[in-house]
Image 1 (cartoon, one colour):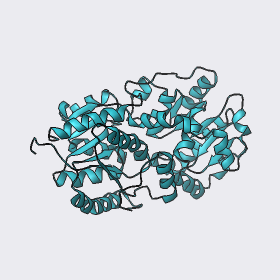
Image 2 (cartoon, rainbow, N blue to C red; image 1 turned 60 degrees about the vertical axis):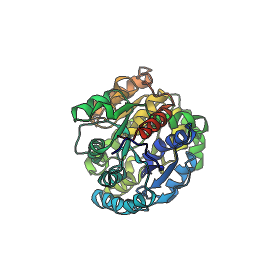
Image 3 (cartoon, rainbow, N blue to C red; image 1 turned 120 degrees about the horizontal axis):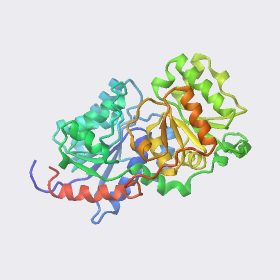
Image 4 (cartoon, rainbow, N blue to C red; image 1 turned 180 degrees about the vertical axis):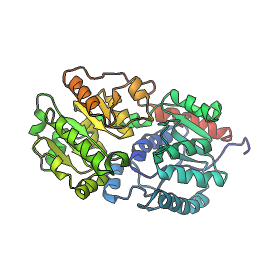
Length: 382
C-alpha cells in the first residue's frame, strides 16, 4: 500500500442490533469532522426482524442504509457466507477508502474477510475485547477481525494488552473510548419512561412503584436458554428474585420460543414480572435508567449499566468487558444461585456496587475516532 492519501467513502457496516448503537455516533462524527469524511452505510440484514430494525434506525436517527444486503437468518456458517457473497459486489462497485466494522457479530467478520482479501483497509471499532471463551461465536469473530484489521480502536486500555499478546502491533491500535456510551449519553433525555413502556403493552405501571423499585432482565445467550434444565433453573431464580423486587423481563425471541418449547411458562409470574417483547433502544434506556438492578447476559448492558451507575448482575461465567467489573457496577454471578441471592440482598440493602465511569466513556469517543481516522487515511492507511 502506498503512502498516498486514500480517497473514497468510509464504508460503514451494520448487521445486528448492537451495531446500530455503535454506528450512529460514528456516522455523526464522520459528517461533523472538518473536513467531513464521506460515509456509505451498508446494512447486511443480519438482524432479520424488519420492524425492530426500522425502529432502531428511527430511535437512533440513523440515516437510511445506502445498501441493504438483506441476508436474513441462518446458521453461523450460512449467514457469514451469505454476507460475504453479497458484500463483495458492493465493495467492487463503490471502491471505498476503507471498510469500518464494529463489534463482534457475523457481519463484522464476514465483511472483514472480503475486504482484506481484496486489499481494502479494514477499521475495527471495539477491538481487543476478550472473554477467552472460544465456545462463544462472538469471541471467534473478535479474534479473527482484530488479526486482520489495519486500524483498531479500543474502548478500554486493557484491550491493548490482549492485542499485543496476539501479535498485533501497538502502532495499529488507538484508544478512543466507548461509542456505545456516546449513544447512551446522547439519547438518555429522549428515552421513554418505564411507565410509558409498560402502559404501551397493557401492563399496569403501578408495579414500578414498589418500595424497592424494580429490576430489568434480559436473557438470550444459547448457553443460558437452549438447555431445558439450565433455563428452568434461571427462571426459577428470577421468580424468587421477583418475590422481593418486581421484574421487567424483555423476552428475546430465542428465549420466548424455548420457554414455550420446554413448557416453562408457569415460571413467569404475571403478578411479579412484567413480560415484554423485545424493546426498542429508547425503551430499554428508559427501563435501565430508573431500575434498582439489571440481570442480564448481554455484553452491551454491562457497559450501559456501568455508565448509568445501575448495579448489574451478569448471568455468565466470563466477560469480554472486565472494566465493567473492575471499575463499574457489574458483578459476574454466572448461574450460581447463592451468588445471585447474596448480590440481590446487598443491592436491596443499599450495598450494591456504585463503581465509576471508565476513562473516555464521556460521549466523545466517535469524535476521537473520526479525527484519528482522517489522519490515518491522509497518510495512506498503512
